[in-house]
Length: 427
Image (cartoon, rainbow, N blue to C red):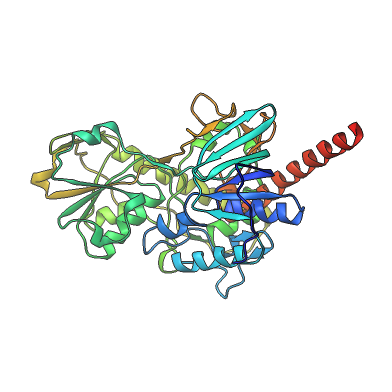
């Protein structure tokens, strides 16, 4: 990759500092390059670090390859309806970055951003920058979430977070209790299951989605129906929508849906949500049946949306048999002795939190979440990119990150031009 040289002075001023060199930060850089706006991208690791280092070996996309639409760089491979695996994803994002000259500085950690006299000071472990604008594209996966009671679990039982999991051999021999049923939880459970490892699953309240339905991938139907065009502002309860867990399904081996009831029918031990730990005792809420029902409600709801659309538009699509629940929990286990059960490890798959401790600018709410409209904050000159539901469902994904980056770059260009004109008028 060709990188524009950036001279590091005691205080180097640029129009815009971008924090983070993932797909969001590099998309913003692409559009700022096109607009000829000077900027720098600061990345504490290397570009696309999360794709290279924070995903497990068998990771693959959950959405089809055709949804990969980085700026002027859509997926051009031979399998648009397939699901790229980890190495293919890395090749794709690297090729995008190589398609333009980004002013990228890798291995630079931002330690403070503060607005002083209308200018942003950006302190790093390699010197001080200043800027008229800052784009925060560092993502929301800084801090792996584990509950406070995890510290009470017997230390002979290994605990690992999904962020650190790479392959089944990372897990000690014996039974692994996977906690959480978002996309990571169900896929890592399946990864262990396919490898012939003993696994049990604590089922949380995550929703699930059909994969292939009535002749198409469900995501194709949703795209055709305009679902991905709905903005967060158009949602009945934007805050609730933003907080929702992603629907679980898989792109592995050509893509398939995941019905936990079928796994249970085949012998997988399911529990409800983990509520406490003490020594070798693990306690669960009595919510397994409810969580399975709620996941199925979401699954059936998506099918119904598609059915209604097909009927309304008069589309000729093959019928599907009605959904049936193939397994029900007769009883719900609320407490186990992990040692007696043979559980030697717990794999936490219950999410992440962002870390904005270094962001000393008034742009976060009481929960520590960015306050913005389509990535543009009320605090003049602050922007966010790459967050889920920044504007639409696809904002935190390859599908719509380019649109969001183009919008933010346009806002910066407009403000930059306005300031330049005022300065010229003053002279």
